[in-house]
Length: 240
Image (tube, rainbow, N blue to C red; front, top):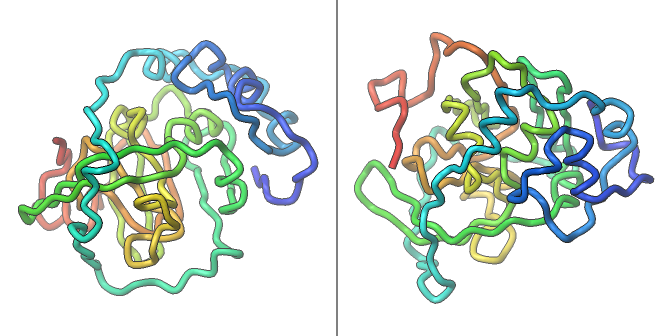
């Protein structure tokens, strides 16, 4: 489903969640309006399958967050896998596909038209350093809900513009503090930190938090290639 060419219809987040079968989840209900598009109303008529509705409704433990005066602006070290990709944000599209009823193709405008969620969390690197960072973006669970995964889905694969790849368990991907972020410390996300879109989450080590994310693929089984570092012996779950 491509949202990018139908900007005329405006629906609220509450309406969006009613369409996708999630209107009772208070965590996802915001007071702001969200400009979305005719494709949503035309196709998201079936409720989300019961397995995923149960997972989203199940309380997931929130990690305590920090106050703005605890942010450490200089502490986040830039680690690059191979190179920093040159991404045209006007042409950029996030694809959410795999075992879903409604594959999505979203521009940054589409994503930024959804209400912003902000978290101030500790980013922990496997190398032994950490940084308190504010990330702003869209909870991944909201986009997964729109895509409507099939009941067999257990994993989410993330592909990045530089060729980096990683995989998560679906419960971690749907954690309420797991974001696809486009802000860092209240400003636009720098390219070196993963612009236009990167993963951020307080429940995973840094190497699981892919930068420059271009595709999220939801699947039932882990593929032979489970992640760039994971395939070299790093822990797959990498939870905190």
